[in-house]
Amino acid sequence: MRIVMIGPFGLRARGTMSVRALPMARALVARGHTATLLLPPWHNPKDGGQCWEEDGVAIENIHLPPNIPGLSHLIIALRLAWRAMALRPDVIHLFKPKAHSGLAHWLLSRLPRAHRPRLVVDADDWEGPGGWNEIGGYTPAQRRFFAWQERWGLTHADAVTVASRTLEGLVWALGVPPERVFYAPNGVGQKAGGKRQKARSKHPASCILLYTRFFEFPVSRVIEVLWRVREQIPEARLLVVGKGFSGEEEILLKLAQETGLASAVEYVGFVEPEKLSSYFAQADVAIYPFDDTLLNRAKCPVKLLELLAAGVPVVAEAVGQNREYIRHTETGWLVPSGDVDSFAEAVTQLLEGAQLRERLGQAAARDARERFAWERLIEAIERAYKMGQ
Image 1 (cartoon, helix red, strand yellow):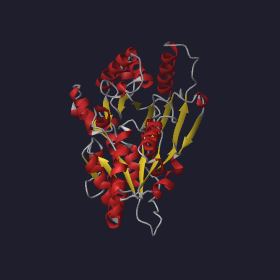
Image 2 (cartoon, rainbow, N blue to C red; image 1 turned 60 degrees about the vertical axis):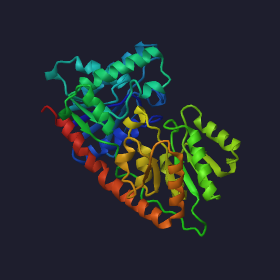
Image 3 (cartoon, rainbow, N blue to C red; image 1 turned 90 degrees about the vertical axis):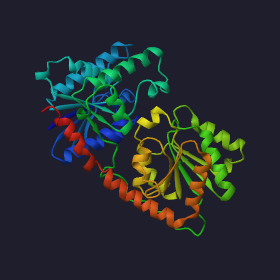
Image 4 (tube, rainbow, N blue to C red; image 1 turned 180 degrees about the vertical axis):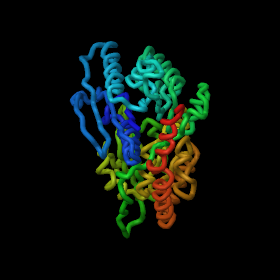
């Protein structure tokens, strides 16, 4: 089967195409299919026109037109649709029902059904009201357009793939028949890093890792948790890996300074994927705070899966896919969202319990690679591609 995957943006700067579409394509190639990623690299214009191959997956970045408000977006969508059809695929998989891929979907759907491939739409976030529209910094006109695109795209696809159970329910609620909706959470690929090697130390466990993009929670809660943990374990420290969208890391560091915790917080910033293992190895426990919002319930947190697959013991707030990825007390620890006391108590318990940390970490790595291996999840994608044959 020939598959073309159309993205709303390129491989860099945003995560969907690099952490979801590309590993999905690798798994498809391993099963004998051909796969091409067709991308509009508007975050990285220098990639325009560049083509290469990764593990049998062809990656094509279209040439970007001059930036003419409104018109350039339509030209990008036309180029994506034209190039996709030129590749003569059996299936076109469109990632995110919005922006350029959403426009390309609308254009492709204008073709007679007998003369076009099957059109499958992938949703890995809720984009409309209560979702990315609330934090994306869009204009009112953009929010209305993206909300319309999402509704139209999800209800006019031959099949829909979703990354979370919440998205599955939202798509059903739009009237899409359940037999056309396929649950495929983010997974672990063959290229995932190996089991972390936690250095042996004579010192008590004290390193708490926060690996994050920050927008899922108020940073004040992280400081509160750290403060309460240090009441029991004074040497506890916080290692922060990641960068916020709106300078949230600066707010965290300011709060740490104001509360006298500055010396207990180390901020690293953004880290390239190939260098993450050294920071995972430093962590005794990782925390994954998560507000109970529609945006969070709908998303499928790749960073949490990375921590689990690496064997890092994790305390996470029990929201959305966190409850799918973690089996409470078996592969990690879940606490109610916003409950600082329970969060701090769980972190303290893990820092004080070496055997518990070891058991949870080993079970998490094993479970992630068994239940969420792309080699297994790809079967749902194949069923979506065959829908309506």
